[in-house]
Length: 324
Image 1 (cartoon, rainbow, N blue to C red):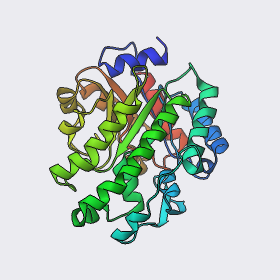
Image 2: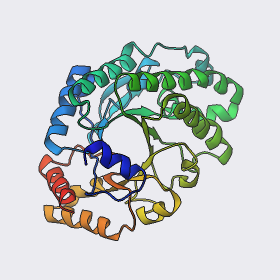
Image 3: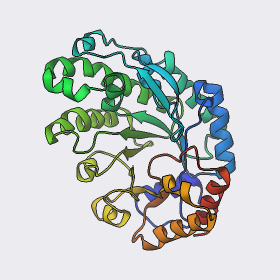
Image 4: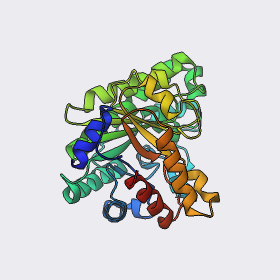
């Protein structure tokens, strides 16, 4: 069973001959160019042989093309830091203009996807990281929700530009060779009212998925943060869900009762920082697998492997999974 068959079965929650896994992290500095990201991705894949290869683009690449100024990198996550937002007051939304995703930072990510595809086509499933339209909006306007509540019509009208850009980027990524999309959202929680969650988060993502993902592609949804609205998430046309399963509800077994597709989770890599004995990492992973009841588990981090986790520790985690 090759990696494609393995993942396809896991997405259907069917038994697999071995436990699949998907690990990823950010690549600071390397992610500034398509060629640099290619090298980092291939080196990481060659070393750890993940069953799904997530293209870990710069954390604010999309916001950059909409005018955000970027600084250095978060020392823990390895994601780029925003230092200036293009939208500081609600009237600034009128300056949001349609962009061409084949150029700028959007275009760099598409080029990186093309380069990676040439190297790994047919060897390992790849998924391009795509942020939800609302997540991109929040990276150019930190007060997006307050501004929406103040003038919903103004925000709706210009928010369409961001939705369109993320749809175009998703299509271009799949055309560039990605087998699937890793769609991340930070807004599937009680920070929004139920109505806001539907209009600003759920509906734009549903439209993005339906307009881009074809029969031969897959969609992994990442729910970032505490206590995500898991029930609502399962109403999206998705193949798998990834969330902070070791840190918030639902746990893996509870999730299996709610959602019948693939579950990506099991690794609470943030907690490994305080572990002195690598055997404890192995023990934790084995315990998660033993306690999980059902099929369809792809062992993966709840969000991203932090920069402070060394390669030897990741190697312990991978070897443990391979021996389950």
